[in-house]
Length: 190
Image 1 (cartoon, rainbow, N blue to C red):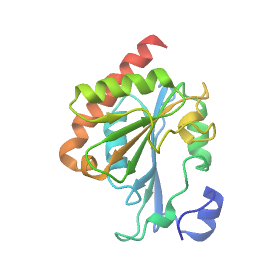
Image 2: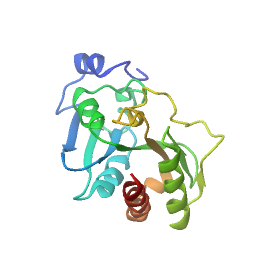
Image 3: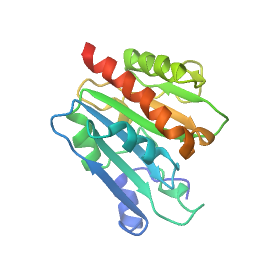
């Protein structure tokens, strides 16, 4: 299994609490939501980074793989098909959406999404935090209108694809701080 086409298909074949779980914090007063649709052991470290970014300020939605190491890739629902009902509802109610993802490669963060202003803010702040950021010409553009990051109230959001090495615990706080700085800047302008 290389992944499911929808959450409904996944839910018919996997057991919540055993194979996967949903971790969320709905803060209705927050205009922003942080997503880790491939969290837990699907793309390790993404849930942890998302939770650090959300902190006590922003809404959070994490879909997390719980299977033993190496058996979670089949829980992957591609971002433009990720349709967990709670995630869709929470995201639709927010103006600013950031998706945290994991990818292969070395020491890079790839920025995408339809919110060019937010993507630019993220690139600036992550570069300022000392990371190599690729904004254009990569394989993770995140521009499909059904990509979960683009399903907020404005129809545009941003996604970050973070290489495995940078999702290690020693980098998470610094990455989260850069993302939070970009979010604060974006929300001040909105």
